Amino acid sequence: MSFDKIILATHNQGKIAEMREMLKPLGIAVSSAAELNLPDVEETGTTFEENAKLKAEQLSALSGLPCLADDSGLCVDALDGRPGVYSARYAPNRDFDKGMQMLLDELSATKDTERKAHFSCVMAFARPDEKTQVFEGRVDGRIAQAKKGSGGFGYDPIFVPDEGDGRSFAEFDGAEKNKISHRGRALRKFLEYLQK
Ligand code: IMP
Image (cartoon, rainbow, N blue to C red; front, side, top):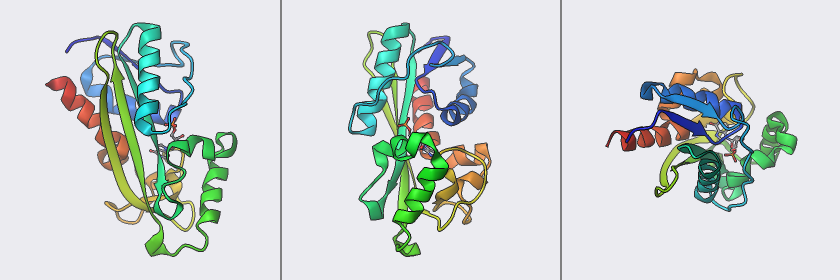
């Protein structure tokens, strides 16, 4: 499969930084939707897959270029999977400090053993006149009792992955997070698909 440019269908700077880093080995130009003045597609779906496909297909159709979209979110067991697909909107005006505090408040009576959560990511790769491909990734962990660390983005300071040493994702460096994260896992499946 050959193309020399790909668009990332997101305006989220945190996601763009992580995806750019992981796409470096491809050696192709990677532009974000914002850089090409493409719109932020409204997420009207009710699943990660629906939203990822919507974003990738609309922006690929608008630009005529291959487009990779990520839809992701934090699913908390004790909250029946919330905020899930609504993770970005759960935080008032996308203020994640407030959003994290709201989550910690909702879980204030929840014991450590019952604070299981996971991040999910679905990536959709759309190209004009081709069937859209979908790749999934997930990382399991738990919600910390308080925010820790200053790296990453979104809910990283309150998420402690199981495959770690008790640090939150905001205390991981970028490469370390990409190795085990939901986005890293989905993106590696995309890279494998390209090599087939
Ligand atoms: P969307 O995919 O644009 O709907 O946004 C997903 C939201 O989920 C982001 O705005 C973040 O709040 C959250 N999220 C997704 N992935 C991560 C992550 O790796 N770390 C922290 N928060 C994340």
